[in-house]
Amino acid sequence: MNLRNLFNGKLYYYLKPKINIDNEKNHINPNLENLFKQYGTDKANFIDKKIGHGYTKFYLKHLNKFKKKEINILEIGSYSGASAAAFSKFFRKAKIFCLDINISNFKYQSKKIKVFALDACNKQEVDFFLKNNNINVNKNFFDIIIDDGSHKLIDILKGIKLFFSLLRSDGFYIIEDYKFDNDHNKNEISIDKLKKKIIHKKKFKSEILDCRLQLKLFDDIKKIYTYKGNLEGSRIIFINKK
Image (cartoon, rainbow, N blue to C red; front, side, top):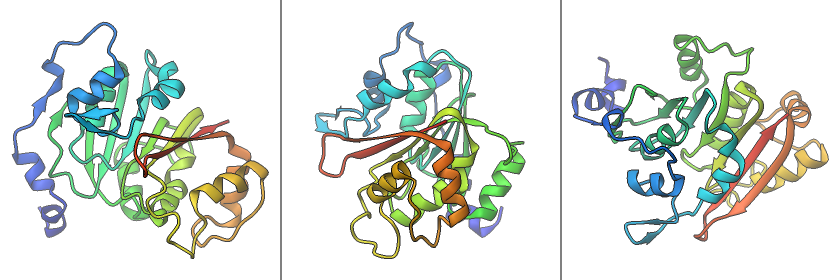
């Protein structure tokens, strides 16, 4: 066990007891909002009487079609694993891959959930993760990718660069709370402006998304949906791949 693993919480993750959600009773028709509340993710409308982001209705609108299918979900930024736990109950046949730079807070356990301590913006670490899990970078693997990581613009754009190509046809790339850093970084294109450029297929300046990748995004993206949730910073985007 090296020092890096100690700092990213890997040792603590393996040693601490976790809640085995596979032993819990499964409901025939799980309600996604109730699952969000039960496991404590702020995607819900309310968490312990506090207002949450209110993303449930948007997830249901676009992802309900995957409910009974065998799918692979990638979650970037999992923290305690609350949303992964909820999704494992809602998508009964899903395999969920959780990436977080610090996994010491992860408290749920399931055969359907795999947890990895890594920096999702670091290409070397991402390549190692893909190789170790037999995920071919030249083939589409994930049906749903959710970026709920740092919410910083640079990290969001790096996520698109590293992971969007792994999305299957008609899958969704979802970015939560994307307004966090959008209006303060002058060196990169904001997500709102990126959406417009992709819709109109117009090239733009970016040190992260180069011209070749921009053309690929223009060709691969079917439609983009943006929504505002309950709170001021509650903005979520669903990018549907062709």
